[in-house]
Image (tube, rainbow over the protein chains, first blue to last red):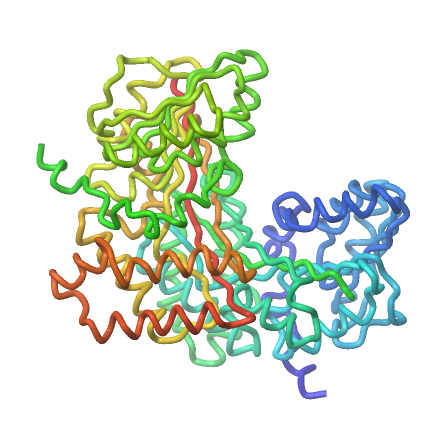
Length: 280
Length: 280
């Protein structure tokens, strides 16, 4: 299918490029889902949850504590990240979470298989997000099963200070996303995509979420990860190959991040759209 | 003082212009403060809280339920809105909240008077936000007293659909804010302003918050309030007087809001910066 050409995860999976992924938890990345999960688990403790695009699996494993009697399955395109996630879950003694490889466009599960289906920062990378949402809805059980998604609006980065290299990086990361078949404005379109995938308007709960980095430790997690993407890895390679940026411009972006990292008053907020769909 | 010329609240206080203000509660507008308030109240139930720029008072009165034994004081520049807020608190039977007139630049209170000092969407309107923060810190008690602020980054509006009139409105509302001595990017600068006002970096807790409007009722609250600002009131008057916009452009903005209000998939997220400062 055509969309599979646009299905890669451009940044890649090297440890240092996904430093920020491993910072992600249910609390900082799926707060919209937690109260729904607690409500469902109160009447059905043995919930089944599917996490699509689970990556390094830190959100999946931290969702597990809200459904200790539940079963969680993580799916990701990359065999490499799936086996790493399995090894880490095993090492941490988390017995009710497993990871397996698969594509969001053709999930290896029967219709109506899960109580909850979750995807975080996944649709934004896809050229056919509505098809992907249909697939998430397909494997979710009807009559109160939930499909939850949280996707960045890449335009919505609020930062201080704002050196030119950082402004240029912000534009470039969105440009690379769009050039790879993804979306700069996914967060703003989630409700629209959910309607197109067949969800009923009054069963779509929309909200917004954020990531915020300001303390020295927070700045290091985000800024360090972004600097790695400029200095190595898939985003750098793609941007250079496609003539979207020069080496000199990339160096200026590194300097921009350095200035932000060193600033005592450094601040960055990123806004996401969130939806929780109750499947009819 | 020079800053007092830039101290007005441009939109004005007519009922329909502040429809959105009256939608504001502690839960949707001060979530960063609530856990701190609960923690303080656990050891000192008779907390004193000052809410500066309290406007119609809905945040102040909804904060009251977290400190039922506490005493809350709201301060606003406008005598008109202060007496309305007092009447409404009295009508609702809320006995521990009072409102009075005053300026954030010279609060009518002694040093170290309050356990908690709160301001919501206030600094963004001021040409001397650091001076205002110094004044908030002055009236806050030392050794664990808290100063909390939440301010919009007006650039961070994530909306869908995005008709040209709505894009133009978004630019204009920020332009009017800046032209009136305020800031488009206050949310991103809160940490910076807090440091300049004398706060210690490791006693500033920064976070981000949002408002989100997507259901028909939510869209009406926000879109209705914004349309009123274009059709009547201070923002319209100022923008026309200063030649920032034409009548025809304002009509196009109304059409933009109408299209957004009518869209089943309409969505708008606004991002804010938040700080809670522990006074040393």
